[in-house]
Amino acid sequence: MIKRILIALLLLFSTLSWAQVRVVTELGEGWRFRKGKHDQAYRTDFNDKGWEKVTVPHDWAIYGPFDKEIDKQVVAIEQNGEKVPSEKTGRTGALPYIGEAWYRHEFTLPHYRKGQRVLLVFEGAMSEPRVFLNGQKVGEWAYGYSYFHFDITDKVQEGKKNTLAVQLSNRGESSRWYPGAGLYRKVQVIVKNPESIEQWGTFVTTPFISRDLAKVNVKTKVSGGNLRLVTQIRDAQGNTVATDSTAKVFGQEFEQNIAVTNPQLWSPETPYLYTAVTRLYAGNVLRDEVSTRFGIREISYRPNVGFSLNDKVRKFKGVCLHHDLGPLGAAVNKAALRRQLQILKDMGCDAIRSSHNMPSLEQLELADEMGFMFLAESFDEWAKPKVKNGYNRFFEEYAEKDIVNLVRATRNHPSIVMWSSGNEVPDQWGAEGVKRAKWLQEIFHREDPTRPVTVGMDQVKATMASGFGALLDIPGLNYRVHLYEEAYQSFPQGFILGSETASTVSSRGIYKFPVEKAIEKQYP
Image (cartoon, rainbow, N blue to C red; front, side, top):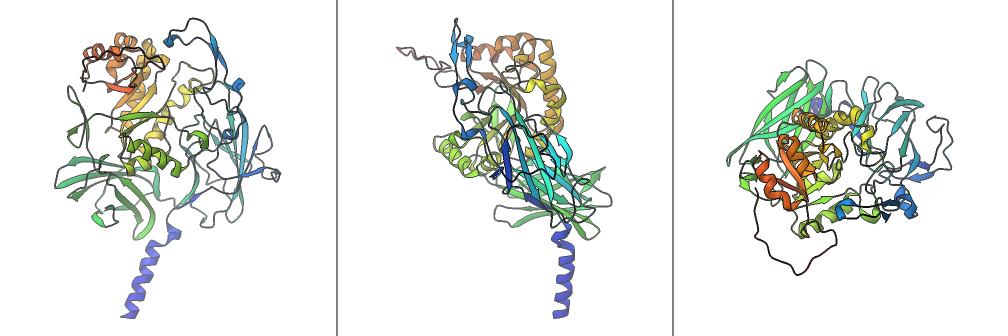
């Protein structure tokens, strides 16, 4: 009997050995940082002993000093009826976010074995990061809010120290709000086998839901051949409620349909979460394992009805929320985010729009847990600029890559009920803008057919005339409350979204008395 138990244990450990599955290491402590130009800082022999020791996530600009000259403008704000230019400041917090900076970090990979793959994952780097490992350039990105990763397998050193160097550069006139600076979101190293699940390679949806049964569809992209996949669905207490080992394979993608009985539905009032544990085997040997948290919920947008969650019509009671944490800056802090969201929850908020960029993964995790419907936004600019050094410089080369990464990294969050491809973009004018809106929307549809796409439009008359607003899944109106009736009648969708508005009816500090009560109108 004892012999049989020992043999079983040996077989179990040979199958589930941690040396055979992925190891994720967060590079948090141990960084060295210095602001300014340091042309040789990518080299392994560069002397950084005098540099400041910091922990990532890190925002170097929040330390100040404040200086109104940093973001001073002499302009007339036309939408406020101004005719004469006057001095304006504070758009970016009067904080010194402009300039170049370097981060360096040394790390080893104790679990790494030759032949494995190594990924370097960034969840946000402000901005225009250039990444070097052991003196060699790994790659670069542009958008400071984008998630991205590089395969560093051919540059990593086994059993030795690896030197990571990241150069960041924030230009002036690149943002309309405080963007932060530095490695303000997590950096991770992932070690996994050649036979493995791709980064952001799982996609969990719930295409059928009834009171007694839910169909959970799991698509999993993998690398390697002659593999099999086993997925367990676990409830919020960690109990296994369903298992599937009969995945169909289409090229390098497995697809599973798993039945969950008596499903608990996700909503802002009951944010119930399940976990899909997906294991990849070569024969009987476990090669990779990924856990994906998800919710069982149904969303729909119907003409003359509007938005429904789990077959119940409801309005969004939401806010547009920038990514920074006030005096804490842009560096992600989950405790501070939780406090922020709890305050919103206590005041009756149930929805958030990430204005006007890609949200942090921590914010989405909390939205899942605490019960917020989320409108995940991508860009504040397309090809036409709002500010001299904004995203317009990168749009043609990076827009598709940035949207692909946004969707793949976040699509399993049940809190996300809608995508936004832009906010008040100047491209609302003209035929080229219509083409761009269609192109971006189709990328979202390709990557995620389950959610609609909107744009926060402030040039409503122009979008009525050009067809821009008509082609969107959801026409979003920023302010312009006086145009709601006309927009509702003009656009073919049968509903409109107040994507950015206010109880003060967009007066921005101008209040007219006496107040006259108007007849309230409801739009789906």
